[in-house]
Length: 506
Image (cartoon, rainbow, N blue to C red):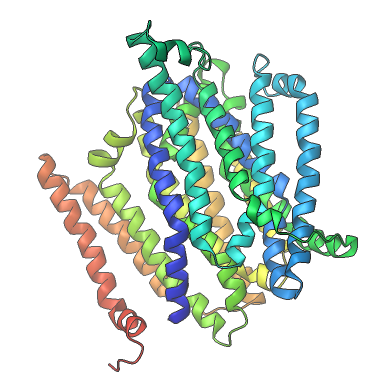
């Protein structure tokens, strides 16, 4: 329980920038959906889908390789400098190629008039890739507060710049057109730009985040050992393919919607789907914060004799939290979450995909928990195979269902949502089955299905018992949420109290 409390504490600290960043970021979703039409918001979704995929390519598993060898090697400087030099070299080559071939790339992805987008995102990707190892070092050194401070600073700068360019600048120019402030703003602001400022804000924030990491980089004693670099790459490359396949599962649905649907509806549907995908805010916040804390924790915990029991118990608590998040999101979706986050017209037509995507992301979180078996055993090729199977499912189902939807029998993004659900569900099941043969952990399947099934059952109850009066509806949904918490407390009370007071005897 001491180890679990440590993981919970680090998840909370890592979650600070993630939680606040996502909350502020989702406030921007309300801004974007109000200011931009679904077509323009769809363009944002398409470019960030490319970014998610290419970010995995540019870091090529070096982050996890750093954690692995940082545990095995006594010379920590050698591990850090090798990973850092590797990413500096490959990011520099990537940035050069993107700058030279920006125009052909823009034509290839069907944005021929926006080669500037390609260059901006090339810089964002390079800067973020270079930042990966310094951030990993902070996690390995157990410095979650500094990690959180730098992450949160980047997030806040991004948000402040978005508000400045999208809201404040147009307001000043329109309201105080002859003022000194308006004249100064006219030097840095173009009224004909819109989503461009979303991208520029991100670029500036990435630059500042890397600058804040310079103390971690500057103190490095640079050591280059080609043979050791090969060892790190050998461990990392299967993770690269796993990551690439994983990003196919996470983001390619938006790209496939963009390029498989008819041109006149494609970006509109991407915009609607992207907005609905972001409603899984609490689920993705928790899973991201958990990942930051869990990976170094699992590697460190592997040395303990009761490591497998700890992993099993962690899974119990993980299932409780994600089941609670699923239930809470769905109970308050229509009365609180959607009115708060989605402001523009047209976006709410995709509401029905939200529970599907929530459950899909829940499966993904469980998969992350299970995936520790192939990282600890060094069998990282299994990660590549599992993600590749998921990618085949994602691509196959999307190619099958998206064109079918263009005749308006269903919306294209419904097919994408269910493809995501089936993909992550399959990966979760396969990882469990294969992992039990290679690294047996006695997970409590009764609790897994029990808590997950209970949350879904209470959600179904809320559909059939849905009072018309708002205050009664919110009150009843709150009772359902408390009922879930009460049942969990009944079954987990003894373990929780023992964890909080280890010397207490029951």
